[in-house]
Length: 447
Ligand SMILES: C[S@@+](CC[C@H](N)C(=O)[O-])C[C@H]1O[C@@H](n2cnc3c(N)ncnc32)[C@H](O)[C@@H]1O
Image 1 (cartoon, helix red, strand yellow):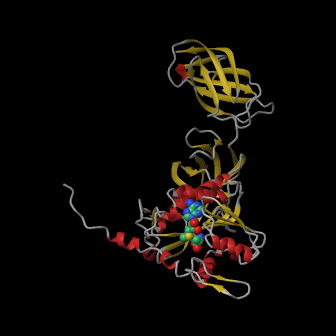
Image 2 (spheres, protein in one colour):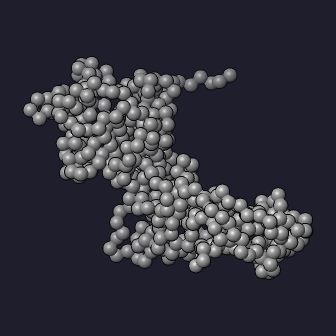
Image 3 (cartoon, rainbow, N blue to C red):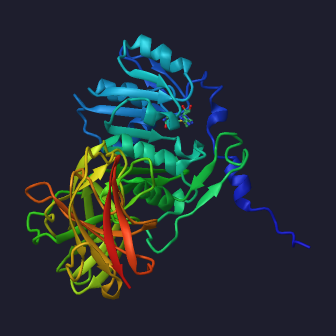
């Protein structure tokens, strides 16, 4: 029989977490407002508290010409105040709030007000914003990490996340502690049905980094709330920086290619040489098209050669993206590039040569010498790689291990290995890339 244990004391504490019972007394206003004629609309949140919150976010005082997205705007104090400071503001809420509409009219506001759920934002065609406010929404979400990835993809510069945090009053920075989160199946948090999760402060920080932000700072943790400011870029290179690491190669962690897809959960492997003897994961600053990506893994391969893994940062457009990295006290490496959401396109393939990869004997692969074949092709697309070039001998698919850069005539070398031993004999070679395929040549496989 299961032992009966007393109810978790946090249960009753969590039920009390909400200021919404004050809403009725405040005439339905959550935010307070001071209008241009000096009159005040008092809400649940006092104006001084709203101003103190905004001051903490570290946004420029003058927001002229900057774009800002306020997700979960409710009555809209943050939307209207940042508009007053010059920003082009888009405000989003999952439900139309009558007070927002009323004030929008009364203030003659040009805030673009959209009724959208946070999960609808990727398809809403809003573009990206210099600043994104994500205040008081995270704990309302069934899919918090997905929502943070959406927030990151919409952010060009800085996002502010403010959330209920279970350990806000006692939190101190301690990287040794594993971040954790409570899950509320029903109305355990504040008696409300749409409260789903209670993260610890470090859980918010870790999730924000996992979602793709380069730097995440806790600017306040007190009472029931934590405020974290999330930056997409690294701090500038220090003036006295050492020379940068040597970037050896940048590949898809799972398939060794250079093609990445934003709809998939994909990771980048970075091989580089660095003189820093005691390099730490936190000191690796990778960058994709200017956006910082924290390293999730770092391993010394041998000597000064290292491997770091990062995620693919969200919000990348289709096309080629420059990638580079630096360490905490170094300049950046030279750039390489990766392809994002690019189809494999080829008009016609032309096989100009085929040899054993070790003996160079024509139209032969010798399995006693490793079973390597080298093929020279024209017509491969620019983004051809080990994952989208496919090579068969008869019905057997070979492991493509190398696709060279094009030579001056557009020719490329493809190396592929017989992965499963084949009986000696002649096999038809077939190579496919994108919609194009070439076949017909016979390859002598030696045992
Ligand atoms: C606690 S209020 C926060 C108001 C304001 N951002 C602030 O912090 O003062 C939460 C707001 O998020 C909105 N919201 C909740 N779930 C949402 C979702 N899935 N998508 C968009 N907005 C959501 C609510 O309608 C509400 O306006």
